[in-house]
Length: 291
Image (tube, rainbow, N blue to C red; front, side, top):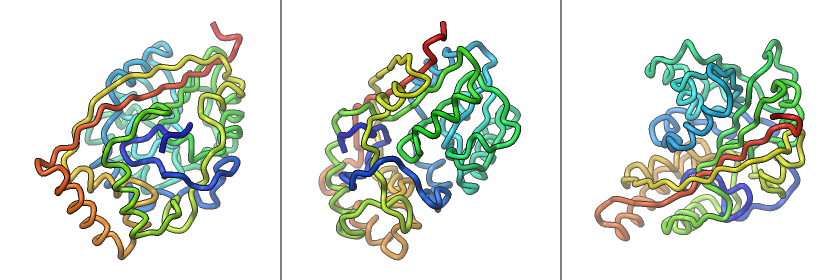
């Protein structure tokens, strides 16, 4: 979907859900139910250019808040680069996977895990003050104005807020994306879902415009090309990491859906390799008085 929130891994963005104001979900922890283990297995880490850029936004060792952290896809990379991370997510399942992954990568000492809805950030006790905050491929799931106001209370003067996406707005989709959209429609209907039972809420305003309207309105943007090659097994597994095609969302339809994905793509790409050139985006906001 070529829209202002188009900032995900291949096939992550719903196609054209109904437009509303901001994402306010009654049960945010349910959105990625069943996605924890597949997320660690099939989601790719962020491009090194993005990680390197983020690690130079504040002096080391910076204390950084990661909102909507999932299992720590970005948090662990930042921890390995010397940052001290407080990782917040509404899903305990995601946090449990993150703790296991952090231990395996030897960075458990550098990450504190908190189970909380990002919208209630101001109510999380004793978070303290941060040198910056990152929101990686999660901003479109959040009540963005409320989150940015809350960050204004916990990010120190001179600190930053960075909205990170695997895909910059208006970049071209992979050739296989529309095929996967049609297969989802076949098995789930035309509506895009935020987990097993909730419609996806499409934000009306792009992420950059939202940051510019916040206290962090001195904005800079990084866009970086990178190339990814997926195997057929990876693309099939990747579908389990998305809120609209997770195991919890598909239920008893999962086996048939994945068989359709496998058979359709294997006919069109017999060598089983699916290459794409993508463009990541990092939107960094600071307060006007920052120097």
